[in-house]
Image (cartoon, rainbow, N blue to C red; front, side, top):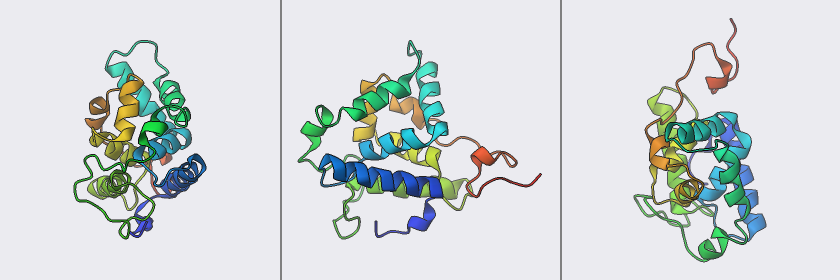
Length: 182
């Protein structure tokens, strides 16, 4: 992307790189929010916990929603991906982004990454983490990520009311810059 990737923590830079590889491997023209969701859920245990907790809160039976979401995403080549192959994902992206502003990214994916950085700034963190991106992905109810979540029995609006997990001052799981000395 052309915007400042330094606003993403190391974890999210890894997630975006994995999403780029996934899009390339799938033969997609752009990285979309479903690619980001797939890579995020594979890489971030807190995002997985948030998805399962949201399913539990909504009364979804059976638990294990993350596995179901990943199952839908893994079938992209035979399922959603066929319908999405030639369409640009721009649902809820707000301003239309050109290929020059975010080459290789759908407008909705680029907007989600910008929103994740905004979530981090709002809570005083220098870089966005996984839960910031998850909050941004589900805030766009028309995104491909939200569509996949709904199909797997997770209502994005339940996650949207829990934008980012609270940051514990001495809990390294919640820090963007690593463990804190006691």
